[in-house]
Length: 230
Image (cartoon, rainbow, N blue to C red; front, side, top):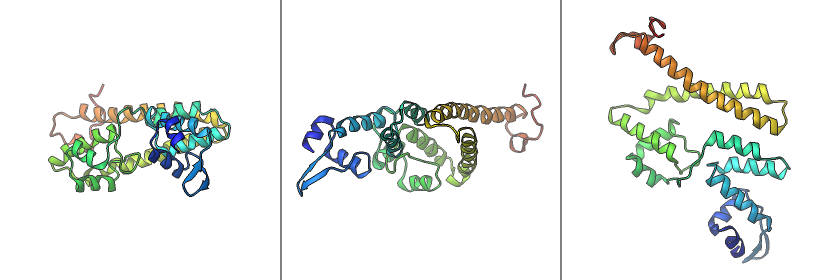
């Protein structure tokens, strides 16, 4: 373990956690206080660290990529796809206490948002900058009397959109080999993100354009169609 720590630059607790999660192979124990790790653990630990820190990937997705690598697959396309999906995150994640302080949020409010799935950290108990930005939006809304149940439709309808997107992806890629699947899925992910942002924003813009003033009932029921939107 000491040699592995020196070779990887990782703490003992981190390495043991990787082993526990199945990211590194179990060592060969020769006595209660002695265990030997495969030299391949050094390169594998470096890859895990890179995927986790540079590409912002959660451990579950890293495990999938490592398994693909073990099977002889070229993981370049999988890493590129995962990076597109999860983005890059250079700043350290916040634990719950740090997150609450940074967001100015009360613990019970956080619990409500987690239960409502309006906050969806990628790893339990760890929050990134995207989580923090959204939490601050919720805190501002909460100060105006906004409740989690008032915006539950984002989660309900969002799940339906994601279900449809996944079904569409499956239709296109189900018969493709893994490398081609990843490449096509990458383009579908980019298209889906662009479509979500465009359609919802334009629906909102058309609704506002069709109204005469902020108290216009057309803002609520959409009557009046797209007149005046062009």
